[in-house]
Structures are given as C-alpha cells and as structure tokens.
Length: 459
Image (cartoon, rainbow, N blue to C red; front, side, top):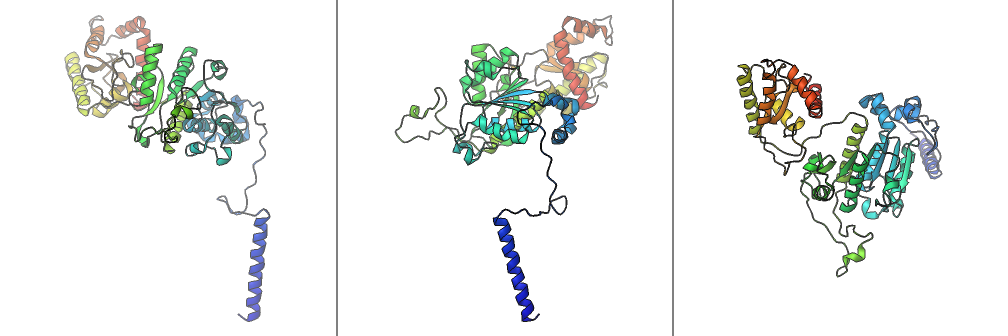
C-alpha cells in the first residue's frame, strides 16, 4: 500500500469518525440492529385513547394495542377470566415498597381501574425499594408519582391518585365506588386494623400485607388466614387487635414471611434528641426498619398474584404455614387402612399412598377437622393431628383422594355410622343426601374441598 493510499484511508477514517460524533452530538437518528433483523422496527401507532378517557375494558380484545398487551394473561387465565380482571376496581392503600410493586403488576396485568392511596412523599431512602420512583421524584407525593408513570404504561386504565391517610374521615372517599378488592399495604397497626375492619363491614375482599422489613429469605413467604398469622410480629399484633377489639378471629388473608427478623428497629435522629421531634404524623413509627429492597418487591408481586387469581375466579390454595411431622402422616395412613378393614373386611379400597395422605391432610384439610372453625386451636408453627382420622365422605365410593374427609376420630365414627344405619347398607347414598339436607353449609364446604382435590388429582 503506497503513501497516497494510506493518507486517503486515514483521511476517510477521520471524516467518518467526525461525522458519527456530530450525528450523536446533534441527535440525528441512526439505524440500529434489533433482534428482529437489521434496521429499526416501525414505531407503534399512537394509542387511540387519552390517559383518562373512556375505554370499555369489557371489550379490550377488540382494541389491537390493549389486546396485544394482555396476550400472555389471556393465554394464562382465558379470555372470560381476563375480562373479569379488566373490569375490576382495586384500591391499594400504602404505596411504599410493597404497595407500589403490587399496584404496578396489577396495572400491567390489566386491572382496569386503580385507586392509589398514600399520604406520604417519595424520599431518597425509599428509592431502594420503590417500583418506579427516581431521584427526580423525591418530594413528590407517592400516589401522584405512581399515577404519572402508570398512565404511560396503560393509558386506557382509570388511575386515581389519592393523597390522604386512611382515617375515619377519609374512609368513605377511599372505599367509595364498590371496589372489587383492597390491598392493605399499611405499616401502622392502628390504621391497618381500622382498614381491615372497614373492609370486613362493607364486604370488600381484602389482603393484608405484613412486614417485609428486616428479612431476606424469599422462600419464606406465605399467605395465611389471620388466625394462623403468629409467625410475623406485625401480623400477630393485628390478629390480637382484630380478635380482642372487633371480634374478628378469622377470614382475613395475610401475606407474611415466616423468617425471623434479622435486625432490629433503628432510630436515626441526632444523639440526645427527642424521638418525638422526628415524628411527622402522630402515632406513626419514629424508628425505622432496615429493609433489603428485594423483599418488599417480592411481597408486592405475591400480593398482586393473589389478587389477580381471586379476581379471575381462579384462586390458588397457598402452601400452609404450619409443619406436621412425617410420622403423623404415616399414622393417618395406617389409621385409614384399619378403619377400612373394620368397616369392609378389607383395606383394598384404600387408593392413596403416603404422599397423597400428606397432601390431603396438610394442603387441603389444613391439618384440622372439616368441622373445626379456622383458627379455633391454631397456635404456633407446629400442629398435631393425632386426634384426627381420614374416612370416606361417600361410603359407596372407594377411599380415593377425592372422597376422603378429615374429621376427629369421634366425628369420623359418627359419619361412618350414618351410612351403616341407613337400611343396613354402607353403600346407601340416602344417608349422604340426608346429611346434605340437614347440614347444607357444612356439606357444601366439604364438597368444595373435595372438588378441588378431584381437579388436582384427576380422580
């Protein structure tokens, strides 16, 4: 290569580099290679609906953009269930780490109307766990920060930002409009209890989130009835207040972690200062809880998953929070075999193994008699089932997973006697019909559980 060629090549390189610098500096458009091939993808057409304009979510599948947005949800839930989600109205109270992430996923999953409630502002210290806030948002009300972002994600959704604390005075406004669900993501006990009581009185489904602070293990998250919420300090205090002051012992689902707190509360004020000088709102905490930012996000997404499945009409049965020793399941299987042999002269009708007995007792009957009220004797994380027994619900059908009910041994004996006393035949279905007529609520509850078992086991 001669000198003239080298100089020409060098000059061309310099000119090209200068042109690239000038283009970047002055914002000229450039082509990019995408996963779909060389060149830019054509831009999406502008959304046809204004941020808060009318949009009929009952027909979202007729809108090309929204239908594509929700494609994966429709594939998961089916169109009818996704329409139920799209037509739903959810109120999220508390927009910190848990509430912001939950609201975010509810929106992205197609909830058509959201009311976002929080009295507080975005702070620098909350950026480690908030779902979308940036440093530019510090000082902005949390509700408005979320709403502004949400209107970019799903412009068709109705987003209402309410900058208020939940109190008796604001209750009517916050819970107005017949919400389909409420998420309680409040970290103050008094306010939390008041909201749960109000939702219970109004018949509004609600999920309460316990504390995500001072914890790190994502495998410990559980959704339990408030009656079983002894594993978390905040949930335990709420449980006590609900039962003592309002007579609510069960029926409120709680999202919690069974992990013990790794660190304690911290007061970050100046040495010698009075903690009350740092209290922004009366009766709210002064000390702070150290938070690993991933945990509130996990709580929020777990809460959103629970709410979405409830709204879709496809609820899941959470993993129980309590533990039962394996030898107790072995005892249950042997007890069932003995009962079958005593009634029918053989245990050949037993169509369950040890693993299926464990699933039935723990996951479906929750380690208690089908006749026992939730939480009437549920304390601690361990549970004894020595007083219980599995028996056939319908004596005319085999002892398969979908036909076994868990009762106390005395209740099981009485249930077995019903069939034997009916014209001397253990296969007479009239006994079960009579029980349905006599105790319709109990039978409906049992048969709902058995229906879930049959769907899961295919029996």
